[in-house]
Length: 253
Image 1 (cartoon, rainbow, N blue to C red):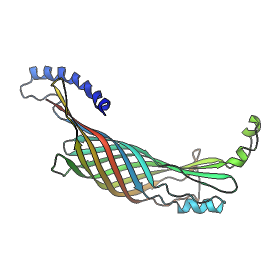
Image 2: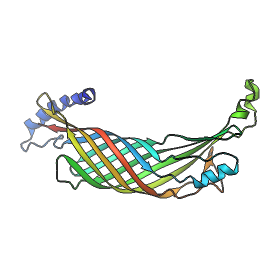
Image 3: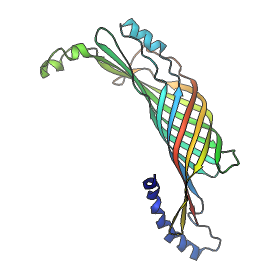
Image 4: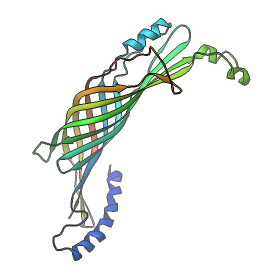
């Protein structure tokens, strides 16, 4: 933890500029007049993924149903400006897998990128409560592995032309998030850098909850080729996230 925050030693460079500013301005306002605050975070989210249509098509082709794919693991950054709180992050779901007696395996996974903007209405320095709105871009991937035919030969040249059902299909989604977040800040020891910059460290532990609106989704595709009669189930759903991070508040002395 110390190593992470020690990177902020670059703040030493602020001192020279700040001192130079103080010799040329009378009001004490410089380029670093506001605090720089935020956190690096890990968020684990539950949001239901409806695989009914996908499973129906898989079952019709003698492939067992996929289960789950409702948990997202996200790496996120928060940025605090006065009462405004911004979050951006990337996330993935663990792969859901199924394998039939015909030696054909299905794998399903998702990835996402999101941005949120919220406004803190809490009055306490130890906590934040902020309604937010967000944009979410995600993609679903369905991979079919025909292990029987793939492993039917040991010859490289023959493998190149072996007929197989193996393929990867994908679908893009766009969503809008409406929700609220709460963080409790566990304060750590404050660190001063050259008596010029103060770094107030904390561990934010909190929760995010809301509703994901699946506003738009593309056709399922393979190598850019769109597929008709593909699963088109709306994935709008309630979501809830648990959040923990390493926070900072850099303040000029």
